[in-house]
Amino acid sequence: MNSEWYLGLDSSTQGVTALLWDAHRRRLGQVVGLHYGRDLPEYGCPHGALPDPDPAVAHAPPGMWTDGLDRIFSRLRAAGADLRTVRAIAVSAQQHGSVYLNSEAERRIAELRPDAPLAVQLDGIFSRATSPIWMDVSTSEECEDIRRALGGDRAVIQATGSNTFERFTGPQIRAFWKRDPAAWERTAHVALVNSFLTSLLIGRLAPLEPGDAAGMNLMDIRACDWHEAALRATAPDLRRRLPAIVPSDTIVGKVAPWLVIRHGFSPDTRVVVGTGDNPSSLVGLGLIEPDWMAISLGTSDTVFRLLSECRTDSRGEGHVFGAPMGGYFTLSCFQNGSLTRERVRNQHHMDWDRFTEALRSTPPGNHGGMMLPWFSPEIVPRIRYPRPFYRRLDPSDAPAHCRAVVEAQMLAIRVHSQWMGGQPLGIRATGGASKNPEIRQIMADVLGCPVYHAPVSNSAALGAAIRAAHAVRQADGRAADWAELTTPASDEKALSAILPNSSTRLLYDRMAEEYAVWEREALAEIERSSPLQKT
Ligand code: XUL
Image (cartoon, rainbow, N blue to C red; front, side, top):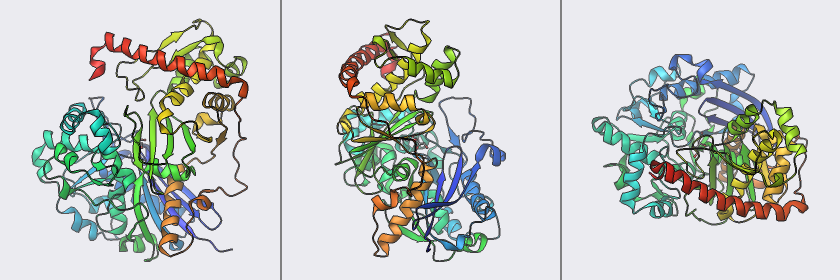
């Protein structure tokens, strides 16, 4: 049978994954990974960021990403991949992180040779030695500057699709300009992680597309082009330093000669504009219809949904990003995810089996026992000075606490995703905790719709490969159908679907109302006791 190979590369916080995918049979080929901490210890980033005495600061050396990219191709070949057969490549990368290049960079990227490691050849092209990444929260002052200049919360949300957030690239650029204006002067180009890596693949500076560009607080969310006032509010002379924003299915070039000679690609291998890991995951999870929602239960719990039109969240909790298939999607990130479930489990000296048993042995609604599980700072709703709240919960009733934390997390998702377009037709659940059937049942009951398990573990890298296939088929005038490309091969095993129990519908309707009111009261209480919470 014919095959049609595409390569998805995902440069995440902790490492890089390369995945070959055959669009003809919708099957994976070689999948290899590299862990920055373990495999490239010389960069001193055990978890993807340089240790810093200031906990608000999270930077990484861009040379580490370059090295990771170079080495992952060798790993693919060592795993038996024939890179000559790859038709196209697309990059997915952690969102928001930025790379600052000097005026030498463009020429040096164009002249990359096959006979020396990339990181060595690119030494000296950075005007800022380290890159701020999405975990950096050191730019509150700059967020405030930009918000004020653009006319307040609502105005920024309306203009850019998100409120200003510390990790977003605009506030990061502003902080760089304010703290080191001389280095800003030496900066000729600002790239995002995805466009920087794509530039190395094609040997020239690569553009952005509306998925990742929307995570900068610099893009006009409706026009999908730079927002003049946001640029002015951020740093002087910014526009000429930014790449162009092109549609998400743009083929930006063919692989540069160093990849052909050093790693054995065909000179005809095309490269599709890169994007962020979340837009890529949207595709990898097959979330291509606005009526569906994806929930990833990981370190943080993330909710994705395509939007049927460009709508923004007036509370600014859901970010609006361009979707790879055109249009928009929204993403909300609840920081108190797995670690919080684990914390409650540990508090009651349980293992995961007993935690699951506790969920099974307690009734929906938990006899009214509820929790606001804010053990760590929270993103949705925004809480800087966290503390948990309890209602009708006996401190010694361990099973009730287990149910309370999971019900609270699902109620929070329900309450805070209302604006996205009402009740979804179905949910695709992914991430470690989604394998637990009791958690999936609570998800189905609280959100009132069937929950399907998405078995994909590298959704961002897979999404990148699928994007590459879609763009190439479209450019070649062939049928390029997202539904076909994202349907898993029929023998791929997902866990069974879980239907909502209709007898719990009214109960959770009432609980969601109580949760929403209680949450507002609790936030007001935190604000009273920690006046800094507001800023
Ligand atoms: C999204 C975000 C993270 C990073 C992680 O806004 O900050 O999901 O993209 O890689």
